[in-house]
Length: 342
Ligand code: SF4
Image (cartoon, rainbow, N blue to C red; front, side, top):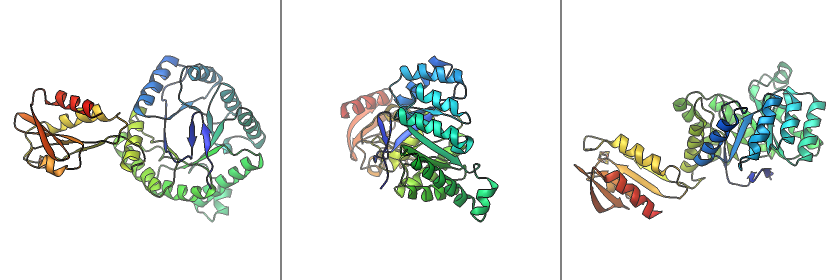
């Protein structure tokens, strides 16, 4: 049976897939960091990770922590003292690669996490494997990586510490899926993501395939879509992945591909309506269709829809037209209809 690991008010592994993202500015810029956290939270983020590379960053992390109500993870790379300081500064979880510290340093971090009752994400990635581990796994990098993760898990267990979340990452989609299928056997919650996935368009596709494939198999407990760009986009993409799989309530937005029958600026209408509904956390289906002849019929299951109609918009519910509105005020009227539905 898989363990449930608390991170602030979130329980990773309890069946609800949480969304994580990471701030992308130095935490010492406290006001900007708070602003970014607020935007991430509004977008639907459940847990925020912050890079803590120096003692000055720990101090800033502590200030930020006092002013937010979302669980914060301190991201530590090489210095175990930063991990201890971040825990004492109020981190709800730390992320550390145990391969980057000595055993005695790791022991000190584990003791501190135990004392403060916080969890630890053990992150390893495809670059973490050394030549010896690779040789022991007969040259299979994935097996070598999972073997090293297993050893870490055993080590934490030998220290009587079980609040661990595992992550095995690769920038390769197939490898990510393969690694996480193996890691799922270890009995701890998994943090999923395709790392260094690139700019939004390519990165979203890689993450949707990698994370989506695993979630469809029932693997994964918390996700981070890693993109080069605004982290709010990461959260929106993560939400879209979860909603597409029926794993998070929210608006299912549909719009037609447009053809020669369309008489409106469909792309902009669709964008405006989508931006209006994307934060709604209710299981609604909203449709934007190009024409009144086929639109309502093509989208019979929509709770509410709008379609173009030569100088007008028509509104429909479950495929049935119920209102005609002049095109000049159509979108605003449609937003009011959405509000009424809510
Ligand atoms: S809804 Fe109308 S405009 Fe859109 S694809 Fe169908 S027929 Fe074409």
